[in-house]
Length: 266
Image (tube, rainbow, N blue to C red):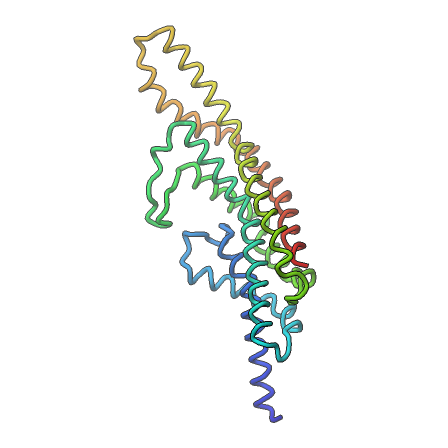
């Protein structure tokens, strides 16, 4: 075989490895809001996924099968996509929980009518929901989350190598069960993060109700709307330190769930 054929074969192998890696990394970059989420064009998210795949190439290229049949390639690709979607969803759960906590606070403080169609994401947005999500992304970046994700992805090919026969369809049931469990934890985490604001606003409702009962001539309804709106924002600002601490602690807990997501496909 002449050198040009060797070069062509080697280049083809690296390109195949890049594509197989992207099947795992693109869903992760696509689904985790810290990589931009819906506010980033699809081309940029695809580029981030390919960049993560390129970082993992030394761990991937040695496991690329030789002379595989089309069915084997299809199974391998489907498994890698399943791994990426599972881990991407689990990795996005804490961010969605933080966003849900902000949305819940907006609902309780009576600002859910402020939800409008965002011209950026083309979806419904909530003021405190967006602020809370941005805060979670900032904390993630401050903790060096992107580097941790890249390192975890590189090591994931040691724990979950390219092997469609390792665990295929048999991993789907526990993966779905884990996703359902994580969805329940989103609600649990959102209620926990929003609890101080929710309790304060409920107490404010009770106080305003008592005022309205004892002094019916006072226009409580019109006074309550701006007061509750300010109280919700105030509680978020006052409890910002505790809120940040809860998010940091939450990252550690969700990292364990993400590790479980990888272990399903071993």
